[in-house]
Length: 210
Image (cartoon, rainbow, N blue to C red; front, side):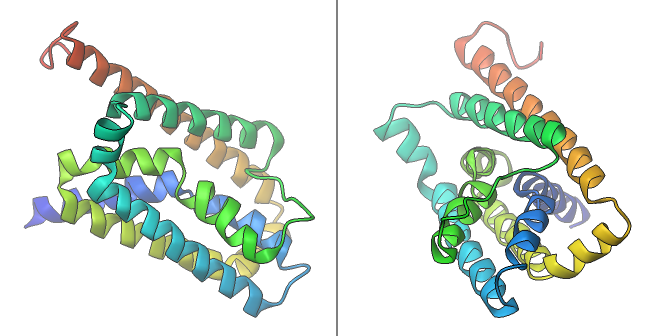
């Protein structure tokens, strides 16, 4: 039982790291300057529901879609997802922000792009949703996705208050850059995992040698 809980916790924490709730604080706190609290809550909930549907869909049919329809192997998706995550993290580390707002974009559109995807259901989280069932099982992966998006939703709903605290203590920029470094590191790890899976699938190296 303890081992099962540890497995679930590991899976949940990985999804939380990939979703990166910190990246939503800056975006939503910027929006809160021009919108009401009710608007922020509405787009937070809407983006969470859309992202959860996307991720759960990939948990159950993602492997079939990628391999049978598009003829894309999971290791390729891991590598691309890792590269995207790395560049997103590097940009945050360099500029101090994860996503720049489009001033002309409507709130309802923003709840889908960029919030639902790619900020919650991005290439890295989708890659994890597709590949994790082979390791953790579909049930554990699904529960982990739901738990992670719930944690992210909680952070999004509290973003206004968290942002005020961070700004008051002048640590918002530092936190974003530290998180960017972590995100970039996770991206590199995904690339290495994808390369390792490719080498094993190609028979170039064995699982034991890795």
